[in-house]
Length: 161
Image 1 (spheres, one colour):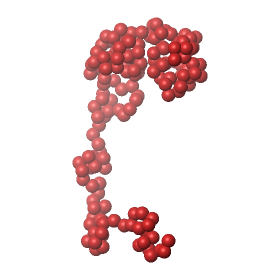
Image 2 (spheres, rainbow, N blue to C red; image 1 turned 180 degrees about the horizontal axis):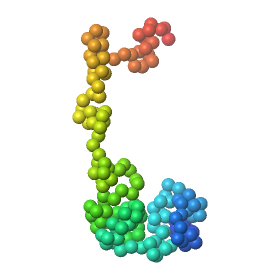
Image 3 (cartoon, helix red, strand yellow; image 1 turned 30 degrees about the vertical axis):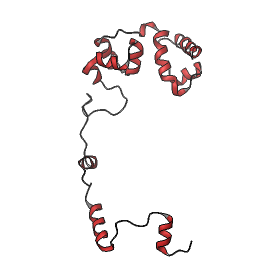
Image 4 (cartoon, helix red, strand yellow; image 1 turned 120 degrees about the horizontal axis):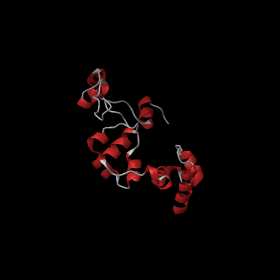
């Protein structure tokens, strides 16, 4: 892995000042595409020391507002993600950087459900038509479901196979 990191660092030094795609980094270093992200984040501060940052609240909030993810900030500060989140506090955690779902107002607050999802969360049916349809069938036929397996369907139809 060390030689791969050295290849990656050399590649990043040659391409200093521009954003390198993960695909380019994979081709240059030979690292597995599934593992390139963490390797790339760790190699960036080594290749370009200007990317290193101090683990202060202002630096972390500034990086989050610039759209940098927690994992990359952790590598640049040489701290863990949990420590960076703790230092950054609420102000840094509320910044949306484009991963996952966005809260209702963009500040991390989740938006309330509407329509079917809200009804499902309460535990009630969406419209009642299913419950009414099943209720009528159960009263007239004495059963609540139809044949489910192939053998049950064939037995019901009287097929000899």
